[in-house]
Structure formats: structure tokens, C-alpha cells
Figure 1 (cartoon, rainbow, N blue to C red):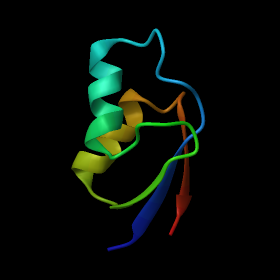
Figure 2 (cartoon, rainbow, N blue to C red; figure 1 turned 90 degrees about the vertical axis):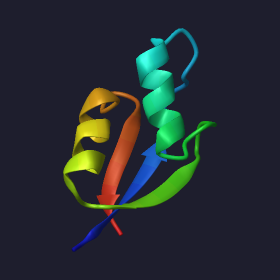
Figure 3 (tube, helix red, strand yellow; figure 1 turned 45 degrees about the horizontal axis):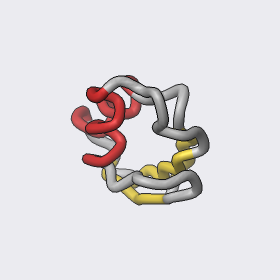
Length: 59
């Protein structure tokens, strides 16, 4: 399977607790933080929840 590089590009301030928890579960806590995650159903679901806050590229 391929991997996805996920970067937090917008702040988590004033976001819902669900969105903050989703970002933290991906390992994203500060703007500019990057993580590499496997491209699977769980990761795709998390990306969908916070798609407006992140940038996703192939790793």
C-alpha cells in the first residue's frame, strides 16, 4: 500500500473537539506538523473529517 504525507496547514483553534481529536490521532498538533500515514480506510476517514485543515500528498 501507498503512504500519505499529511501536513497541518490551518490552526486547530476554535474547531470542534472531534476535529481536534482527529488531528491529534494523526499526530498533528501544531501548524506545519507533518506525518506519514498508510493509505487505508481509517486514514481516509480521518482525512475527510479535517480535510479543510490539512494538505495531503503521496509519500
